[in-house]
Image 1: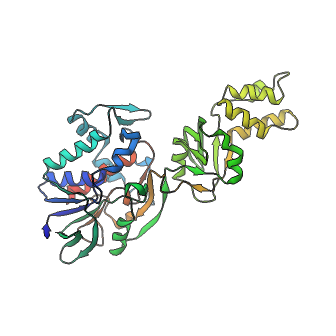
Image 2: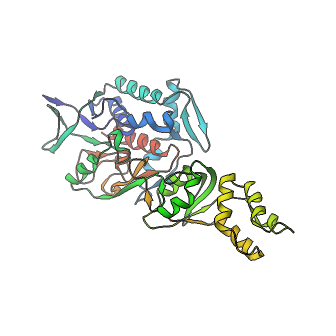
Length: 387
């Protein structure tokens, strides 16, 4: 069956649904094609099931891209306040976590319900369990899906990245980009835990479950948040954040005790030994970490210089991950459709009229804490208003 619309949107995630809503409000006949059995599957699992739907402090500095200026236009034209206004119009209760992270009080279903309702009000037609098998361009876009053929002058690719394949993530969007001659920036897992090699797993494996506040840094990038030791390596917000800046073989510096100071207490008379060091450090970091750290780093002689070196190591732990947990555990995909191929104002391809790319499939990656959802809402809204 041939189905005709003003626009076809591939993907019923955050960006795709927002795009559909904005286009539908403007009288466009919109079809959203989704291969899963329900919309917004990644929305539903985000934030521990409560959906960290935006961050009120969102600004361009919270995003990575080969072109750091690209996201500015969209982020300025659809702000966190705009999305909060929509959330409040539906009476969805929410709360703020530091810094500026907004979560649903109940469940993420409140957000998907809201988006589905907005689609209905805007006259958007959503086709679930509909996998796209081909895309062609004649005088319009022809999208083959199942036994149907969807035809429209506009095609919006909102298929997401490669992260969390168990939720249906694929490289489909990148394939469409290549089909139409667009450049792809190298993709890799981002906001992802690190893995240790065998030696470090043996050394630190007993700390699995231990969490502490740290500063994780690579060059000038620094994040002060919680870190979690796992059986395989390191996780927690600080590690997920810095992982977006990491490349294979690069060391990471971790301050295990920001603001903590071993030296004054240990330089006191009669407090220059392993037992004293453990006692002092237990007051700064979790006990299990204190015990192991001193066992691994205690000097042979407790001289002033040895104590200062112990202090230095505590604040400059050099971590050498062998890799990451990959796309299975990555919250987002870094890289994607090169922003030089797109209009920053509309998300339309410069080379192909009527073809748009929005959301995670584009080379714009946010920090942890609601920023990636804000990019989805903003890029989707800008494209929807331009269709």
